[in-house]
Length: 220
Image 1 (tube, helix red, strand yellow):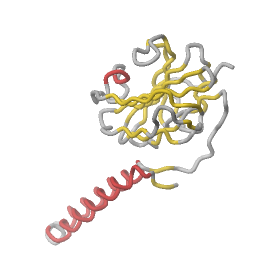
Image 2 (cartoon, one colour; image 1 turned 90 degrees about the vertical axis):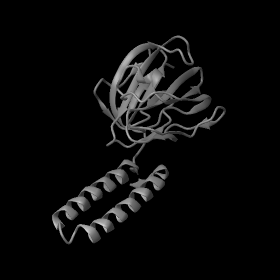
Image 3 (cartoon, rainbow, N blue to C red; image 1 turned 180 degrees about the vertical axis):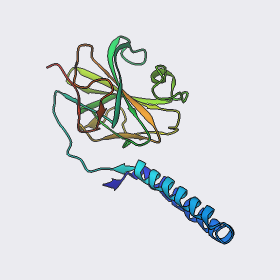
Image 4 (cartoon, rainbow, N blue to C red; image 1 turned 30 degrees about the horizontal axis):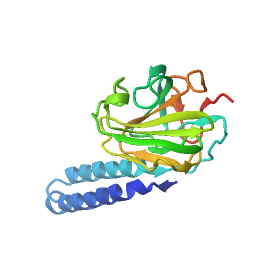
């Protein structure tokens, strides 16, 4: 397991705060209230370890397949339904949404190989990620990947805690399945908009792993 590059700055800042606060606690509190000083140390250490864990990048054996749509993120499947897409397709699509808690790995990966034909950032609200309107009203970044005649929209959505979406893709790029698409910090959601009739291989409430589990199978 390694640490994702998006975490270097955050971990450095968290470590500095950990050291400064514990030095202050040692010089001003430990002599008169050692128990409180220890509580501060343990609490800050737990927070630091959580931040380090949030940016972890585990080693995995990825799943590949030209007709397979691989899960772009770790988390739990919270939506499988037909929706009308007003952003790009302007018709009905099959939406599959994955909710990522702060405890999940937060790197996002390309579900298919192909060409990036659309990439756009949208400012927005910070509703909780499982809110039905979060897909259209929250801060988000949408990309459309095209393989053959099939187009898939992948939408990174900020949640109540997430305040920064990182996306690495630009229109015109050629990308490969399971390469990094981006990163969302501290709790979020990823939506996929698939062609109606696509065979979905996951179920509501199912825990999935990005780059590993097959989310859907494309029609040939």
